[in-house]
Image (cartoon, rainbow, N blue to C red; front, top):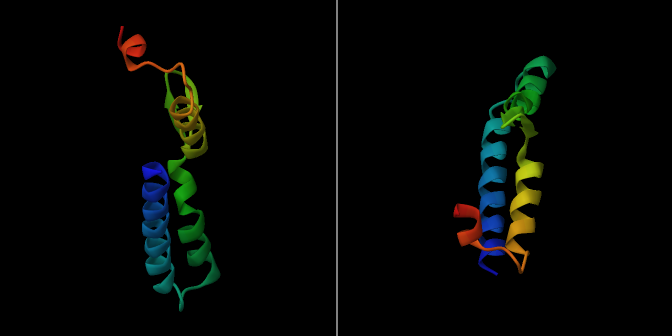
Length: 78
């Protein structure tokens, strides 16, 4: 499946980015390390139309659409 191939590529890019960022932290103090590791949580709070959204919510939503045999883009646009 094309989506699986893209997901693997994205996960690889994320892993390489994390590895690069953490490699620069080898001589840092624990407080600085935890700021880098925990820093991404600051970006997880997004509200769309009054609903709190994060990556897990979006992934579940799009996976549901992608596997829904009754989904129709025309119905959504109309």
